Image 1 (tube, rainbow, N blue to C red):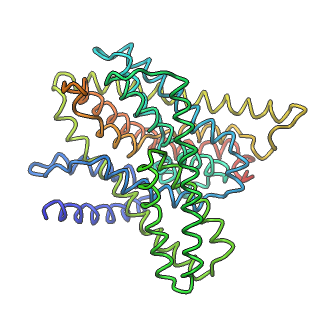
Image 2 (image 1 turned 90 degrees about the horizontal axis):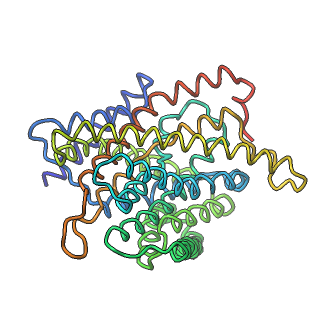
Image 3 (image 1 turned 90 degrees about the vertical axis):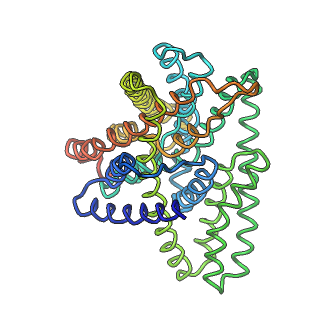
Length: 423
């Protein structure tokens, strides 16, 4: 009952602070995280222990479904090359880069542990980026790429994380086997998502005269799809994304405006509550994880986290601008493998590159690290990995979050001809 009361209190605080943030024109994720940290340090405040499986099940399916449902399928397809590059290639590149840095600088960090840390921090959280840039007038291309990346990169990061943890526990890592498993997980997720979309579509067409029942099925479907996919050991993330894309196309063609309007209002409320609660939880975790680190090591580990944050940002910026060059070359070639609409402007590259914030998925999988190895020994450097991951999440959301709106405004002022580019 005590935790139930705390959750209600946090929701109330979240709603009040969101209203304040809107009034003072400051990004609500930043205010909510700072408030969460402050609440966590209040004497007598009972700690809220996060169950990573519950967190992933509670937050991922509705957020992914809503993003997939609302994304422009046409724009997604036009920018699919860039989205795939960021959501798959950049995830593994970032994991490797962070692993190399951690192995080189952090005492006691071997290669398997370094790759665990890299995998945890490899995926960005577009929820934070979109929340922070809301109302800044981003181009349609920028928004589509950020949202499209977030629909897929969690799946890539979770796969990388599983293999890294397996390596720590003593399982052999064979790259061709890992690649086949990755493809199988993705393909299985696509298949289950499409089947779930077909089933939900049939149900919705049957009950569409009853708007409340129809909307209730859309609320339930993402959670069931995610659980079924995970039960079959394929990607629940990809399954939910495919479900959202399928129902989005069906809704536009088959459903009355009244149902679509009601459904949007309900989903907007759910996503608002989930997004706000995520950021308060991220802040609340910092006082908890800081207690697991010796006082003499807190500042050195904060320094390592800052170094990792900078390295991840540099890698992302470099890869985004390289993608801009590659797209231009592909467009200029005789085969014209891409359309002009897929090209990126300097402004879009800067914003996409700077929007590489980490979030609740990184935090959840860090906390989800096993406490023991198969032989019963404690998982090495578990507390240190969780602490560094949490600090990196805070650095990216607060640091990049505070500067991103300023960067967007500066780019619009210097490149007004690109500010209206919508593709």
